[in-house]
Length: 212
Image (tube, rainbow, N blue to C red; front, top):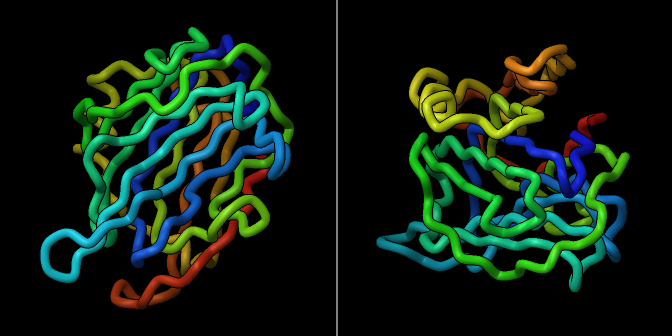
């Protein structure tokens, strides 16, 4: 997952956040000051409906934060406690317009918070889930995380969202499967967790490190 500013890539995942607080989701960052790399986070949490919390998903691709980077955020909040299939594509243009977000197989409206990337973004840091050293820990479940060295076409994103269903939770990991694959068509990295807790078990804060 060491993609640079001019590299196209895609990240697709089944995701369900929980709770009522902001949290980090993915962090591939060299450190907590410069924050070179990319990160996802749930922010701007608000109460919607009756005892339902929702948050905006923010995605940052940075060379030297806070001045050199791209940041987009969903215009609508995503309900915490619900499963979503989320896919991000980046075309290597170095522009915020090159970031496109899809939720449940459909384009999702985002707003640009920053559009000033000029430096490198590649880092050898591992991809982390909810690292406490870099932000608030993740609370929720993740399944079928996939990274690609290309922009996924819309029909393939739709297929991942429709044909694959969330079937594992990070908070009850008993085994993690990671595979590096060759060629353009399969993902260059895939991650799936097996659960030991029952489906009704409550989620807890979680931090996990993937060596990619």
